[in-house]
Length: 251
Image (tube, rainbow, N blue to C red; front, side, top):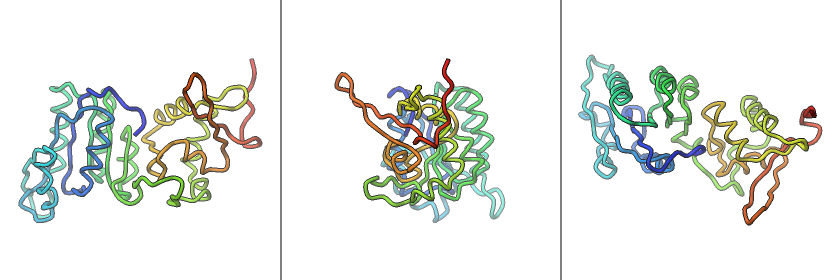
C-alpha cells in the first residue's frame, strides 16, 4: 500500500463476516502491517450460521474477537449496525489512527466519511463488486478477489495498455498528478506523484495488477519512465510523452 504510517500507529480491524471471505485474512493482516499495529480485531456476524464456518476456523489463529449478533428478523441481520456503533465507540474512546473495514456493503459509506472527517485513515477491503460510493469513501481500498491479486509486472496481462488507457478516471488521475509535480522539462519524481495520487482518492496500483507504481506508468505508452541515481540512491521519474503533455508556463 502507498502512504505508510508509523509502525506503531494503532489500527482497528472491523470485519463484516457476512460479506467478506475468511480465506483472505492473511492478506489483510499482512497489508495492515505496513500501516501500524492491529490492536483491535473484531468480526461481526451470526455465528450460528454455517456460512461463517470459514471465519470460525481462523479467529484464534489471528486473535480476532467474534461478536455475536442474532438476526432480528428473517433475512435481515444486525451485523451492520453493530459494526457502525463499535466504530463510533472506538472513535471517541480509543487512540486509533486507522480504521480498517472489511466488507463489500455500501451501507458503510457514511461511517467511512464520518471517520475521515475526523482525520482518521480508512482502509477498505472488499470484492470487485463493491459499490463505488463505499470504495471512494475510503482512504485506500483493495480488492479481495482476482481483480485485486498482485501479479508480477513482467508477465502480468490483467489489463492491457488499451484497457488502462480506456479507463478515463485512471488516466485523468495519473496525468494530473504528473502535470502537478513536473519540472520545466516535464519530468516528475515518482514519490511526489504517488503522494498526489493518494490525496485524490483511494488509489492503489496493485488494483490493476502491478507491484509498483512505476510498472503501471511503464505499461501505458503515454508515459516515459526513467531512473536516476544520486549518492547511491536510485529514484524513478515519469513524464508524459512529447505531444501528450501540456507545456508548463515559465516564470
